[in-house]
Image (cartoon, rainbow, N blue to C red):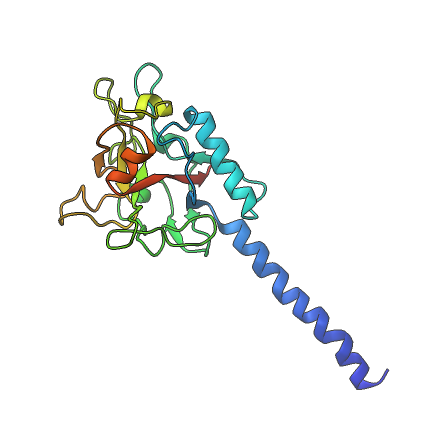
Length: 218
């Protein structure tokens, strides 16, 4: 076979092999994202099941397959659930393959979550403080160590079922930026409660849009 013909066969095959693993690797690596859209009903996510389904739907639409996705959310009251216990063992990487934490301990310690790494499932940066509109308030209903709040003051909008003027939800800042340099202002998971209830307008009022964190649990 002539040399030119051999090259004509080899080059396309080599290109195909070099491109396919890269796409697969990126899909396999993504284990964390901020939802690119909320429920549209404020903090009413349809409970944990509804939130998990939303994570799963967005992940699969972005090309992630073979993974079980869980929302990083806690609940309060009888049978309270800790967000940190729902998300698997790690490590977790964003849509660009950047590791944001190797395990649960690092996630709740010196993690790699910043505005530049807390990306959506589409690999997009979430608007933060200084952007219009600001959407850095991320629903968590969770304390800094990943555990649930005690029953009493609502911090989960009725365990993710309220969307009106009643209730409140704890949010974190995806860009790690707030009004000052305090620990809460820089917290990704427990910055401040919502004001004015659990509606979409209430969440927007403090710099949110009903987004939440999703993690691959397997």
